[in-house]
Length: 295
Image (tube, rainbow, N blue to C red; front, top):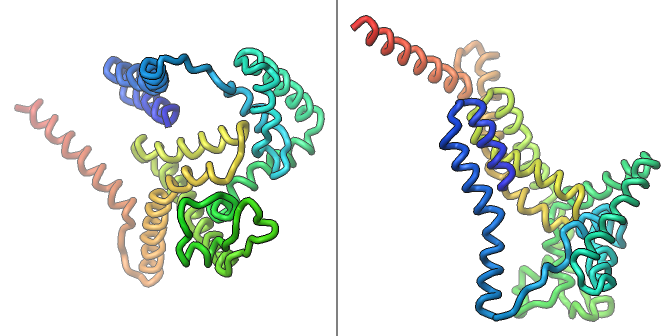
């Protein structure tokens, strides 16, 4: 999100040439976005009188995201995170160096075997982004519950003790139906969001319209390198919903426009009307300037 907003501010500076104020906004945004977590950690340390260690380095999660796992390519594998950190005697710097070496090994593998590389990233991408329930049903099947699940929860996610679910787990009768419904719903939202992005790009909308698409694109890129998990993708899917609503609305107007045009009736789409309004405003401003000059 921080990166997406910073990119938009830079684009806005290039477009409007308003440099000073926007550079201040950009600097404040970067400082707050990058240092806020440090302030929180400092408060914890001050109150607990205990120095918190750096923990598992971020580069270790990248090393894991570029390796295979039992679930799917690039999914969780503790060998490259928890085990690596433990083997480094919980030293962040040593663990980081080991992870960097592992990343170099994987780079060599990818560069020397293009077919494997394509297959790896295809499976990683599809397993994360093409799972319509985003791990919600699976989580309720394998995790402990704070209270007894309600009837609809049991109907969808089943029942049984997660610790011994191999012997006691009973799949929910509604699980298959829910997955089918979510599959269609996911495709509907993604289709609508793609229409919206095309409209934004083709019609040169205001830069603010690019916030959600940039965040989603950043999510794609980040999880292509780091740990993949369908649960992580739901954040970006939620951002697609308002985009989809806008895209479907504009598509509906366009369809109505073409139907009326085929029937011989003249009308304007919402986009055309918006462009006409912008043109009228420019003409009005031009007339006002001209009137001031004459006066």
